[in-house]
Amino acid sequence: MTTKFTKDHEWIRFDDAGATIGISDHAAEQLGDVVFVELPEVGKTFKKGDDMAVVESVKAASDVYAPISGEVVEVNQSIVDDPSKVNAESMGGAWFVKLKPSNPAEADELMDEAAYKAYLETI
Amino acid sequence: MTADLKRTPLYDLHLSLGAKMVEFAGYEMPVQYPDGVLKEHIWTRTKAGLFDVSHMGQAFLKTKRAELGSDAAHADIADAIETLLPGEIRKLKKGGMRYSVLLNKDGGVMDDLMVTRPARDDMQGVLFLVVNAACKDADFKHIASKLKDRAELDIAGDRALIALQGPLAVNALQTVVPGVETQTFMTMKPYHWNGVYVIVSRCGYTGEDGFEISIPNDSAEEFASLLLTHSDVAPIGLGARDSLRLEAGLCLYGHDMDETTSPVEGNIAFALGKRRKEEANFPGAERILSELANGPARLRVGVKPEGRAPAREGVEIVDMNGAKIGVVTSGGFGPTANAPVAMGYVDFAHSKTGTLVQLMVRGKALPATIVDMPVVPHNYYRG
Image (tube, rainbow over the protein chains, first blue to last red):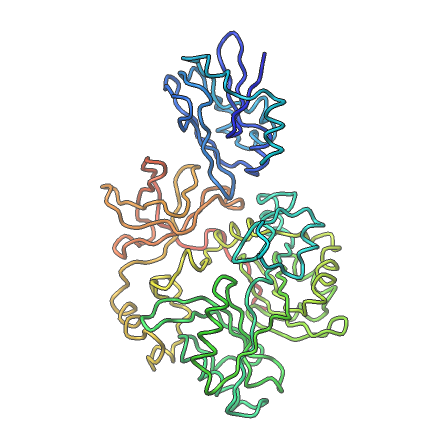
């Protein structure tokens, strides 16, 4: 199972069922305490880079972009019910959506963990 | 961070406390400490939060037309400042303070400010002013030039300002400055601490009981550090300062009021003195009195979104038919309210408490209600 990252701080993890997407520890930490999450409906399709979800802290709202194109097959209602989970488990239990990729090759352009860590050093 | 940003005397202390620094009004200021905005907000509502507000403008306005130290000198300096604002300053008691607004000739708000009549007999004929950081240069220029024939403005660039806010603020501060516990809301008293002159005002910007302490720059860090040794006191950044004042229904100048809004539109008509309204001799009196009599075109109101989604500054407010009736000027999530909190301007016809409206958030119309402010009740100490 490989995890890749975008420059906008989403992570995406691939397995046999498809792709799971969330926001990185760095993104969660920068946002601060998350108080609101808005997720797309199951069945909705996105192109790579589209606004897919919204995450808000006390101070700021931030868009979550689709790292690749695809159709939403599942969303994580538990982070809508308890947004603080995004801060506690950003890389695991607080995933946002599962996508069925329409063009899996798009993932090749994303960073692996080492490249993302190096990228964080530059910003 | 650009090199030309100013720093307050507490800059090093902020860094040592792990603050995240941001630009605000030309200053490098702490937006939050490691605990984060949510915890800092709750801490202030339940214990005592220490805020660096040294970026705000402090000044002493002194009459040139009477010898300091008499009631006549106070009357003269009060008459002077009353030409620029609509508040009742003449009748302030010694050590009393008022929230007021500097008005332009059209009755628009140039800034909001605190005006204090000193408690000391020998300071009669002087007023202590505290204005917003972003407006201070313009405010002081305006005041000094308008009153140049009759008053002198001494800008107190040598003084820091520290706010201690929250229900336990009085317990903590009285261990450092004994006597403050006897002050009531909106009063000021001078003290000596460690050989320096400190001015303590029982007021604030959170809706909680609390104090603002004006202290010489050189002593500010030692004073703040001493307060922070108290187990109920924690440092609080600008992020929580904003969510606290939002829940308390207090205006942030430049967002919830500007040069186009009158004090009546801004829903701060309480700042208009009774005698001042009768005399009708403040800038823009014609417009302001007409709005009081006939209702303003628009009014600042509280707006409560029904769901969990925050509505932030700039969100359009529409009626139930989708017609635009106003705009959110401040909004976010209120940690104590545990709900989104917003304020904004709506057409007067839609400003009644209980009116159902909709907020256009990311293209969707979300249901909301016009509500009274504050959302979280004030907790001031009135004796």
